[in-house]
Length: 220
Image 1: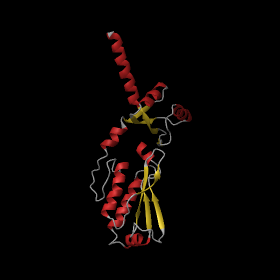
Image 2: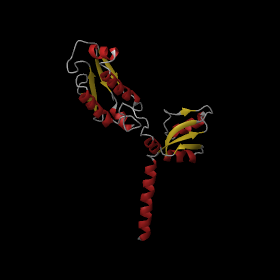
Image 3: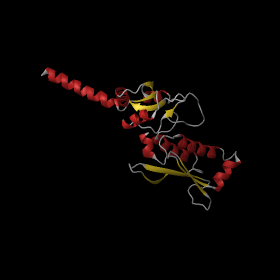
Image 4: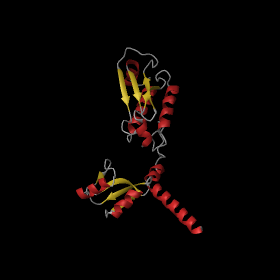
């Protein structure tokens, strides 16, 4: 009976470790980028859309621990550049530089919840320029897509040229979102001191959708 229990515990632990490896991502450098190697990577289901090719023909790419084991089994040599990318990026997520622009917790970028909160913050700070955030629909996974307007009368539909700014169409490009938040703050903070900011706020209705792809961003 004890032997059966020991075997059962060993089996459960093994399965747990194997499944955990599926969620540990590593950055590796594969030494060759010939067609045969690329085909082998593709056959294993390793994504090749974000591969960096170096001058020496080596490839830098991201794989799970289990995918790394599969590469070793078929004889593809590689070096591990980062053993745990999650830990690596978390360790770098606290910026050393103090700025007058509030940064988020994800390497300076806002998470989805932080971005939504920032939209409310901007409304509270600049109610004369920034509208309340407005839903323009929901995603296939049920998340709200939020928009806000910047103008001299944000609550009124005036007869002015309208401009649409969107960010995060691609889930791995959070700077597109951060630039929009920075631009909104610049417009509001410089309205009384910069003629360009004053003109844009007074003579345009600027609509901002900072995260047009929230499902993809949450996945990222």
